[in-house]
Image: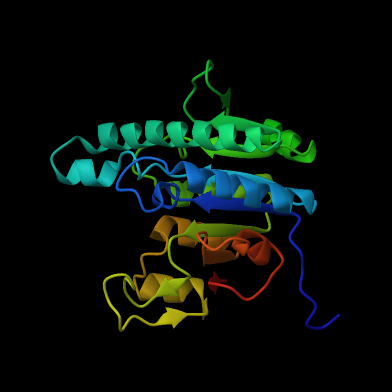
Length: 239
């Protein structure tokens, strides 16, 4: 039916470390962590299969450390380890909310999480578990945005929900520039040509090559994850 919203069956939720930090200057805000877990439980109750890719910028940023003289590969590996901390924290909040969860890591840490295996990840989703992907792609020089695009394609997700602290993509940082204008919709090539910082070029190119839409939205507003999954008009859609 024309105009009818399509409900996505399997999605990848990309959560930045900054989003988990909330209004703190560092680390994980417990209230934000609980709020996100409750929103995830809501959409899981709607029958949606959810995989999560989590960043680590609230604990350690590889690019920042590299710019200050640290070896880039070493800095990136440290950033990947930070995502494990965030993944375990989110798993704890989800399981306390009654959500069955599995953490899958691209860097083997058998005592903490399962190694990432594509078919195993898909099977967990089919069994109704929320899957949290940590440690990015397992390789330096790739961001967790690229990991989100890669994992979404691998598991057959229908969209990426990129959760941020602002309500979409702007011409410039809306926190610093009051004149910044928001985009309601963007094409992949527009993002690349305008050099918008919503996702890195590798992630956008992967999404473009595989026709994978991305919705960028404000996770601080309760219920926005469900709105994004249900196709409501929020944030910015890139397709």
